[in-house]
Amino acid sequence: MQFGKTKARFLMEAETGVKFADVAGVEEAKQDLQEVVTFLKTPERFTSVGARIPKGVLLVGPPGTGKTLLAKAIAGEAGVPFFSLSGSEFVEMFVGVGASRVRDLFKRAKENSPCLIFIDEIDAVGRQRGAGIGGGNDEREQTLNQLLTEMDGFEGNSGIIIIAATNRPDVLDSALMRPGRFDRQVSVDAPDIKGRLSILDVHCRNKKLAPEVSLESIARRTPGFTGADLANLLNEAAILTARRRKEAITLSEIDDAVDRVIAGMEGKPLTDGRSKRLIAYHEVGHALVGTLVAEHDPVQKVTLIPRGQAQGLTWFAPDEEQMLVSRAQIKARIMGTLGGRAAEEAVFGHAEVTTGAGGDIQQVASLARQMVTRFGMSDLGPVSLEAGNQEVFLGRDLMTRSDLSDAVAAKIDLAVREIVFKCYHETKTLVDQHRECMDRLVDLLIEKETLDGDEFRAIVSEFTVIPAKDRFTPILQSSSSSQLPVQ
Image (cartoon, one colour):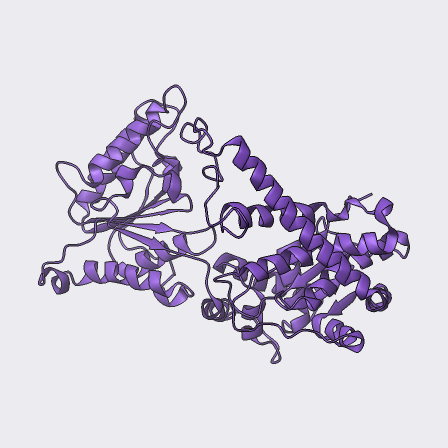
């Protein structure tokens, strides 16, 4: 009977084809994990000063940041026996199989120690115990109990290093997270601009780039992109290059690939008519308000070419990395997001506003509520007024009551409405004052279908003085779209 045997892939010496040189953008995580490799190769360097080998390393970070790639690099560098499996491979339909497989895995690992065990998506088996309403999943909990015992129980497991990866550390059992089981938690976050540049260098090795393509400009244009996003971006650009029968990837393919990764596939251009003019006013409203408010990100591009569900798009590019965001910058983002609805109302009247601002209004409501409840940026003062976590974890959060009284909840609603109404009034005033400039921009956008940021700002400067953007404070990236229903 093979039911109780582990399904881990075993390699005496893992030939993953990945080394630490192939992993870029996560230098701090690499440094932590290189120590693990050094521990396995030359343990005497550490044991001579009384250091002991770490029992486990937990890789934590958003999807696509390179957690599994780092595990492959450790396997490729260490040169020791390597077991790899997913958390979901422990538990199946037979009772007791999960715990049996854990025992078998560690038995084989002890026979081949020193060795590495990599468990991907450990949250599938390591979730908090007793979190189910009316009793938990006993089979999964037995598996977790066996895993806890094997990692650091009565017998111990010297010479076995466990590496696990998850993007949901909040749901893991506290007994699994403690030192002695996972001695280190390595955070693998989305890369900064230097990290993105080094990731692009790695993924460009086997691609033909035109001489005018600057990797630094691509890195600046892609804040928030993970390593997987950047790899996908360059692959999409290479596919477009082949489709257009070009010899090398040019800036045109890079731009189109960025737009496709963020917003979706390009649709058919809209035919001339009332709908196209309305969408043009909506998008120009976003871009014009974002340009005229000093604290807003500079506009990068305005287009009427549909992508995904959006019939038109306005892109804003931050000058620097997002770190701390001021009250004035959040207010500027709210005003920029409301610019589309304000332009529609100014031009077509209150009775003719459309559903195009539906997504914008949701975004504005979320930002304003966070200002009041999380950041203390309202008259209610610097008090956290959030009612628990954003995501419900069944059994733990579902039964918790709200700490807010009805009176405070009503005050929160009033404060949110006050912020939004005040910003909308200022946005509407700004749009009314620059109506002539907006009409000129709309005519040009309908004719060209796409305007880049420099061209847009040059036309605005003919009518008014553009306020200088604050380039010393990292600011929030903003992009907005008119989500008109497809007829």
